[in-house]
Image (cartoon, rainbow, N blue to C red):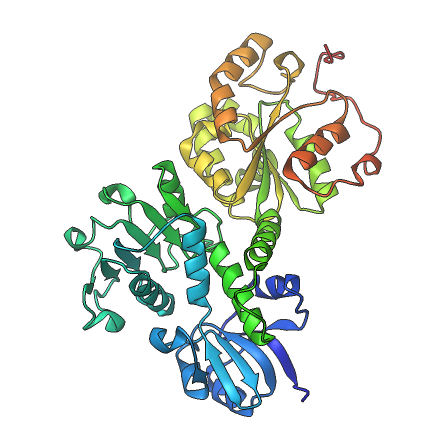
Length: 452
């Protein structure tokens, strides 16, 4: 039977979603987004003119009445995957599959642990069931109201407000299901980990940015942590299996999920270039953006746009401290973007807030250029080569500790430097040799021969 609508995602308001891309990578090119007004949902489900859909806010519970509910969805009390069969609509919950995959992938466990769930909405309901299914010793649901209907009457489960810290600060596992920390509110966290002395794992269902503040803080403490992208990909994998009646236990499951996850991470992550002033970040960045078909952004240019003055003018007029404050504003705004190439100021790595912002959604590339080859022209903070050497010694550890890869700048050969970056990042660089105009010497560099 042909259907007017094939596959897709239903929600009242749908912004950007990775779901069509994930399902395309799974082999389903007929998967689309379908925003659904509340007054049209019941009719859509009744007419059944579709093959299979995922449902999201606010329809996960509402879809129950139209489906024969199977599997974990029976106990969770919501569905996110609906398949149209000859016998009627069948509803599943693959969010639980995704959440379990995310936890397992990070090496975490819920068994015999005190689990704190942040939030009390639909995803929290799924996390609550996962904790019960996984054998949690105790479950506490935190919300602003301190109330949670699905925790009522459940043994070893309770709900409280964020102010009642003595009831939850001994948690061993934290699962964030709130939107706090999600773009564009990227630099906030629902709770501070400072109060959790016993915490061993933090899981956040947010995947934009890839590293939320709470995940970043967990990793700094050496805790197990994960963003929500593995959950998103895994739940889509299971939904696709239900759509096409595939074996959900087949051996290639993890390999397929990990391949798609790696593809998405490469696409979403920014490529951020750090290094000393004059190391070629802008020149290499533009070439890298060209070869990878990405947008390019330069922090100096963004600074000028934001404050109507160049960084050099700001330093000369207001001093370095004022410049650094303004530079942080620029960095925080730039790092909210995804999938672009960015070049940053040489000293931007000096502030922890800047470093955290860079790490939130980026692969950091350190361009290492010989100090005797660095330009000093027009740079008030590195006006002579003695100063350059001193600044480099002060900053070197920051560059090395922050970076994911280090690339030695190939003098007079931008394409060679870009090829090295692409090689280390496993990017497709088969055509790099043919994509560049003849190299031009760096007009700001007073030394002509820097190949020694």
